[in-house]
Amino acid sequence: MAVLDNRALNRASLARQFLLRPTDLAPRDVVAHLCGMQAQEPQEPFVGLWSRLRAFDPAELSDLLSRRRVVRTHLMRRTIHLMAAEDVLSWRSRHDKMLLRRVLGVYRSELDEVDLDELAEAGREVLAGDEPHSQAELAKALAHRWPGRSPRALGEALVGALIPMVQVPPRGLWRTGGAARYLPVSSWLGREVDPESPDDEAGQELVRRYLAAYGPAATADIRAWSGLAALPGAVKAVRDELVSFRDERGRELLDLPGAPRPDPDEPAPVRFLPAFDNAILGYDDRSRIVDLEHRGLSVAGERVVLVDGRVAGTWKFAEEAVSVTPLRPLSPRERADLVEQGGEVAMFLSGGTSDRADVI
Image (cartoon, rainbow, N blue to C red; front, side):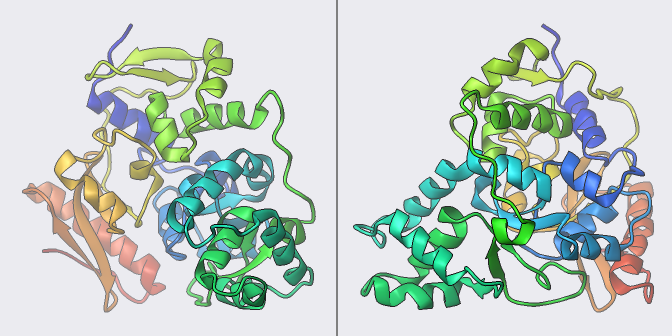
């Protein structure tokens, strides 16, 4: 079985993530290809798409949200993701048990003796109209039904697990604030989510789609990205379609036969990534893109820069300027590339009024 070293895996991941070469795909198609983009910070997907597309107008993503072509919803790992509407309808039922398990892992004692089916039905009654509710408003409307129970726990259970929900605009629009307000997926998209099929078609498709965007990868990587523990059956069902490799640790890696695996020596340009970017959070073993000592950056909400395909610094945008803080010594050429690309990021985020960038 062929062994792929970290550099080979790095280039494969960059290619699948459109970070080796930008793509001309439409923004909606990039969101779908990536199996969604983590989006608890509402403006970050705009940076993620700008870094991947050859040309990107942020108004395009705002329009997709307003036209309900993409939505913001709890899904993988019970975090807010920007998802293609069709994928939410297809995949949500496959995630139901995980979503509830994660809510109960935090609020089990507060939800003790609460009939969750009754809670879900009461929530649907409150949300029966077209008026979206914040989580706090939803919990307040139901608190009298469960006196003495934590309103926060009731709201988290409804929004994060019991009822498939979307965060409706203006939340998530370009340069637009607004509290998170929710409507059921069925109300917003006009149809119920697909039921989970006995042969787990959604799980099998999830495996294929994940490998197309993140592979080659181990089953532990798929599990860490999705938050789903019950994936072995889906992996087994599609295994005959896949090819296998080993990484330097001896782990088996699975992949689609025709997926890109570029030459490890192919140059990788500087890239500015948003907070919580898929390219880092999509794996259990993130060593292909970030050193172990800096792994915590990926869950701390830091925006990072890639130099030669690897995390080499963090960056901020403030006072109309981009500033980069390196994590390792940089060559003069690398610093110049960061300043040049940082200027482009500043132009994007400032709306064309500033191209100021500096490496600290």
